[in-house]
Image (tube, rainbow, N blue to C red):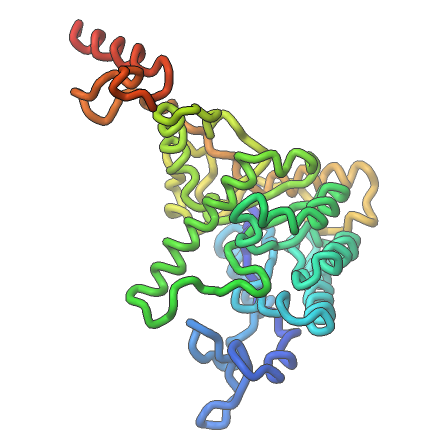
Length: 368
């Protein structure tokens, strides 16, 4: 039986409870009208403390029910506020969370791995923390907010993290979310369908922009040994690459086709199209991010590995992800049957040569 791994397993750490009590705005821990302590978070309402943080035994039981061999833990979005605090606050909080995540991996060998939380207010400090945690048992990389990759200019600030990941052959898990200081969410809560607009439309569009930065620029060229994974199928990219290719046929000058330019960026399938329906043309397995894994993932830290173990870890982290989308051939027929050939003088902005292909297609159809 093939072992399965869930690379998109969020965690709500109880280690930040005291910091939540000290906060004056949400998310925060306060006493409700009944005098009971609750965690109050934007869009999440109130949760009793007994339900506000994750329970390890509950998580393990759920993994067993679902046939998941290993979960790769990362901070839930509503807890990522710790990364945006001033460095004297975010640094200790991230270290506390990361040390606990590593301890979980040690307490349950072979069942957990984890992505680090980083003090993103200071990228140098974040890189130093990533360097530290990659020497801890079970830590295989870090989670980074997707807004850091909306454009290649935005992504420049993240290069110190990629340099560390490349040296350690680690993984960077890019998850939808804001950088410190970003206005987020983009759609105000009093807007109609705010959760649909934020949690679906904006999330998928933002992740698509991140994929364009990572796959259609040379940003990753300097980091051949780092592994990058973008969650939620990489936004809408599996559905939109054909449209990008089609634009290549229409635009002048004609850029290189998007489907012909691939970087080593992987996509996680959780929250995609259900347990057995990856998008058309995408080879990603669909079962809730659970894909074949190598043994002993997260059992020991990279700083304590033999070369053979390090190789196994690298294979494991790469197998945690789905394969890049394979795009089917783009139709080169114009939208209208009566449209002029694309290289007709009346349509000078069309790609050279596309008209001949269109004419051949019409002839073949008339000969049938």
